[in-house]
Image 1 (cartoon, rainbow, N blue to C red):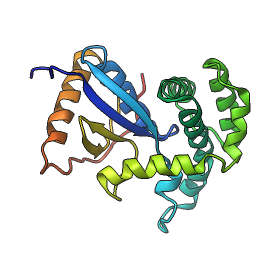
Image 2 (image 1 turned 60 degrees about the vertical axis):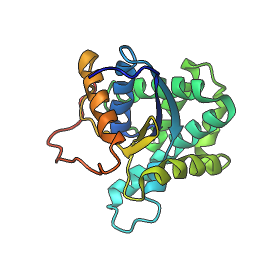
Image 3 (image 1 turned 45 degrees about the vertical axis):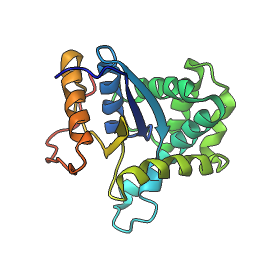
Image 4 (image 1 turned 90 degrees about the vertical axis):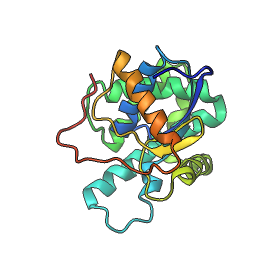
Length: 210
C-alpha cells in the first residue's frame, strides 16, 4: 500500500489513565518513524464517559473517580501550555504508570503527577488541579468534541485520521516498526470508507506494554 503524498493528520483523544489509550498512542509514535504523521493530542475523560451511566460496578466507579485528577491536569496543560507540552506530559505520565503496569490509587496518582511534572519541567503547582474544578470546562469541551465525531457509544481513545474518526483502535499490545505502519494503513483505509462502522472481538488477556 503506497504512503500518502502529504502527511496524515491524526487527532488523538485520550484519558491519561486508560491503558488502551497508551497502547494506541505508542502505536502512533511507532508509525510516525516510518510515515509522515502530524499527531495532535486532546484530552478526554473516563469520568465523563461514565458520568450518567447507572450500570457501572462500584469498584469501577471508584477507579473512574480516581482517574479524574490526571485528566484534569492534562486539560490544564493543554489549555495553558499547548499541544507539544501536552504530548510530553502524557508520554512522561505513561512511562511512569504503564511501563510498570500498575493501577495507582487516588493518593498514588498525586505522586505520579508530581514526578511527571518534574520530568517535563512544568510547575509543581499544577498538582493542585487534580482536586480542583478550575479546568473542568476545558476538559469537558475537549471530551465532547471528540465524542461528537463518533457518537455516544464511544470509549477511549478516539482517533481521527485525515478527518475520518473512530473509537479506538483498542490494541492489546503495541505494534512495532513496519507492523505499526501496516496497522496504521489498515486503520486509515477502513476509517476513510464512509460505510465502515465496527470491528470487534473479545480480549482474552491483559494488555502488553513492552
